[in-house]
Length: 272
Image (cartoon, rainbow, N blue to C red):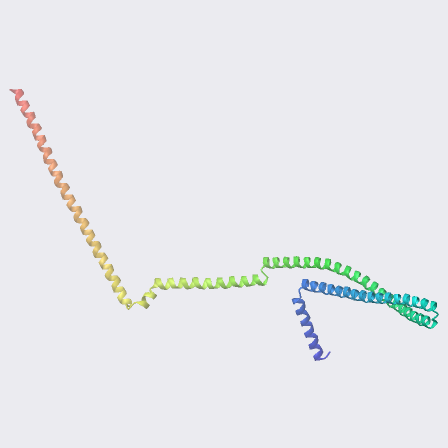
């Protein structure tokens, strides 16, 4: 096999494979069915044309038969008038018309035979078309059911084109989400480390530490002030409590002395 032959074979093979993949069996069956119906219609049209032609010959035959009868009458009348010459001419025409009728009958018989054959073929073709239509619909139903089952299986297994696209879209969305989450985490880390503040502020590290020291000193001073105020409040409360206790003690002593004086007076009165 030469190079060109091998190349031609490869091209035909690939073209055939491409056509097989692109071919839809249901469309092919419908197309074949329509072609058969077209052929049946052509056969019917041929039968109709043949029947028309046969009818024309039959009409022509009837006219010739009428002429034969006419020539018979002419011959009889000519004989009655002793016109043998006219009778001969009428009989000659009659003979000629009968020959034509015989020829027409042969043609009509041939047309009838052809018509009968065509009608038989038409009936056979029509039966085959009906049988093909039944098989076609059955095959189409099987193909569509198999196609639907294949699509469902591909969808369930994720091997279909659409599911592959969906899977790739999910992968891309997941990658973009991971990148966005990593970026957000990095931004938070930079924010906590003060990197953004460094970029937006004129202070350097020393200024920030000094500022932090001042803030801490101010807090310590305020704390000491609070402690001092709380200490003075506690001492003032203690002094007031002590004075009140002393006053209460003096009052108690005075009451005791009054009771003793009263007892002494009662004893003196008893002695007298």
